[in-house]
Amino acid sequence: MVDKDDLREQMIDAFGGADYPISSPMDLVPALPNGPGTRFESGDFSMTAMELQTKLPGGDFPYDDVESFVDDVMENLEEGGHLN
Picture 1 (cartoon, rainbow, N blue to C red):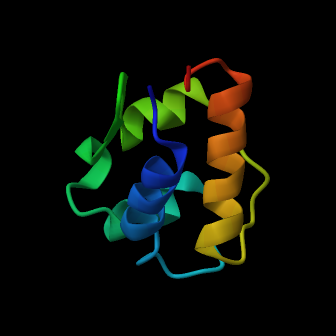
Picture 2 (cartoon, rainbow, N blue to C red; picture 1 turned 120 degrees about the vertical axis):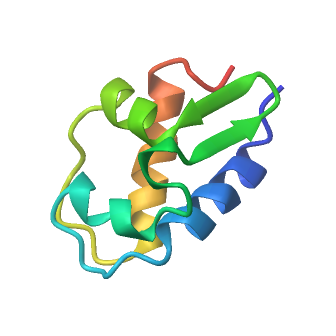
């Protein structure tokens, strides 16, 4: 089972170093510890930042802070059935 709070914290840690506001997913890449290969894992869930980009809709850019960005990512993962 996915620990959504842990997954959210992993994303906040990884995406938090970006220079906000961000206007596209490419603005996040320099902040990621392992670039697009940065992996987020919890329970049965495992996805790289690049996989997230391909599985999720385009997002509601620009984002002013990491929390609003990660909130949207988590919501889209849930709606897409990725967080079972």
